[in-house]
Length: 609
Ligand code: C2O
Image 1 (cartoon, rainbow, N blue to C red):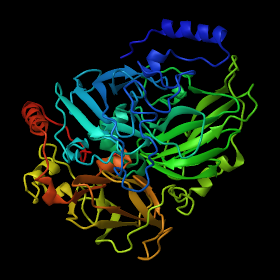
Image 2: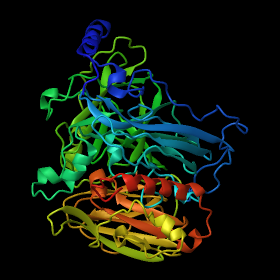
Image 3: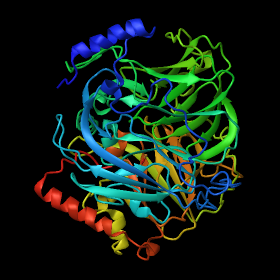
Image 4: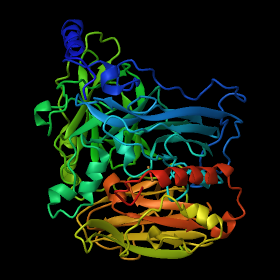
């Protein structure tokens, strides 16, 4: 399977030894393909994009994003940003271990989508996934995490919900408005396919509510698996009674697609090089930097810290918050946190940036991903010998319950009150269930979700068919209620980063045991975001406004849990759907998929999303 020669690697090692003081490092094209993520002096990010004609000054003028209605008063820039995604298999070795994956434009992590608040974004996705490198041709579908897709509900990218998968050899163009600003990511929503490498960052430039000097851009964190995603999903939903089989262990943890790996730990004899190299970041002395943290992994809860530096949290997901100091930041899968870091340490030294998998909440063979922070002017970058702060070292003790920061601490910068009389309240119990054949599935009120790729729920609803061909779709019809409150309770030991499509929700409460039906934190201005953790043995209460006709997934963002059915469909204002304009391409995509699946067997090993 190897396509790299030992010779090339040896040459690099020698070059490395003489050329720089860092430990050996593989060439970027071997580890990360065409991507430049993680290299020192990668370009920083602008305050806004200027390569298209602008109205006067900043594209958003004096606007701020002041309530949970992100499409309120959004600027009309008249600009569309175009992207072309070529999706195909390749072999890369991000951490030195060569494996087959699925990538966009040969890059891992994938390219950044960038736009100004109010722009339109158009992404043409070409499915070129073929039988190659030990994998098979398969469908795909792209999701733009955190975008509300208001009036573009067809482009949410959830196969079996909003569209048929894009068949191999076909293309599909997503078009939507950048109606919120801040930090997010895009990823495949087809099975657990994104964990094969099919994801990347998405930055929407907008007003600053706290000043800073330099935007260092995405700092992408997450666990990493050496096995094929199919195999991991199969193990997770298997009928094994061994906890260590149905709860998959990750092999490594990455920062911007890199980390070293100890090849003697590898489970097989795939080509593997230890000391592949870690990501590097440049700080300018005295300046304040914005880091856009995101957990783009599959399953692990992560604590992030930088030795010798304090952080200030300024946003969670797409919501600016009243800034607060932090020694470490906790992110579960799908969550983003923007932090400001002032470069006020000794500039001749370098420092470890750490992304640490919580061993309380997740299982892994490699706990820590590290990256190097070096100051500008330091041309002789040494491996840091910095140490983790006492507070960050104790992060995992504090997070024994696998939770986010206290709700009391996370206050939206632009206040919005809670509707104390929601139109409806739905209480859902979350549990792990062993079915008649001994296979593990997640259930929400006793039902596990299953996706029919050939009959997307949204397209059925559009045609006025609300009985849905497959009852396993797990759809909740919330009709025309003004607001909906969803109460999740669990008696089980797993925590779940719960993500709702189509909305920013308000987080009313989270805590131990079932919700008492009355406790609400900060009812005058509860936290808003699009992904929040339901702690183990605990509850999570969210509420949102039904202002977005469509079918929106509410699911656990742990890839393996979604694969095991921890997902419901939120059907919203269905009567208005049939009045919407459906793009012709939706039917075309299903035709292509139906044709392809009539001659190919789709190995749907999981719930489908
Ligand atoms: Cu990151 Cu269903 O989404």
